[in-house]
Length: 184
Image 1 (tube, rainbow, N blue to C red):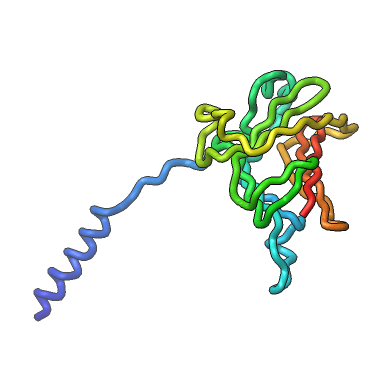
Image 2 (cartoon, one colour):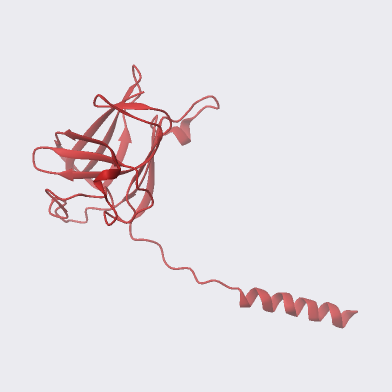
């Protein structure tokens, strides 16, 4: 009986060693989530409902010139690094007078010096802009970028307080702020 127990333990131990996994290192950039209402996951009460969730990767400035250089003017940008940023709308919304159905969309932007085109696209789970196809766009609007007096080191997305069934998604990086008003 003791021999059978020893053999069984050896087999179990051997099986565990044989199934050991090697995990690759972490990405250099960090994944983040922005909610509307802001800090929803941390501050929510049981009856609260999320309105919007943005999942993105926060690259750092690292003394580089970002807007117009690393993120070139006139070229489609995935908004962040690595996988393209995704926006989940928990209900139908209106963005700059245009209706958008509840659902999950990829967020793209094309910056210029005077205006940024903001796009929501149905193609999900993509890396960068490789699979972008304009036929999948559900929204395309233009907004004017704003200059910030302070430098934002890491790409950051947040939402203003919801008032009168409206909030603004704010995206900031380096010394640029882009705002997208959303009505619920």
